[in-house]
Image (cartoon, rainbow, N blue to C red):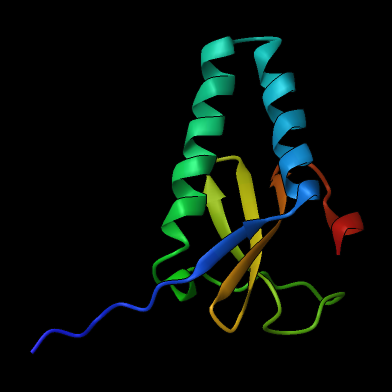
Length: 105
């Protein structure tokens, strides 16, 4: 007998959207295709969180409570940072892993 998958609602914060736009704008200075690829990858990864968002590892940092945020690698250089509350996944940020994002925490 098959097990029915739990469905989650994914909510993307305005701040995460603005971060994505900022990263895409920066990429577009070099390549419009790279910018569009980042946006498409974000959409696919965010949608994938509606099914089994627990699959990704915890974001670990001494400044944040243990077990609050999870991270999902996006296009090798970006992290989609999110938290799960009940059946809702909140995407809170999109950060470039090459930069210090401690301010976010």
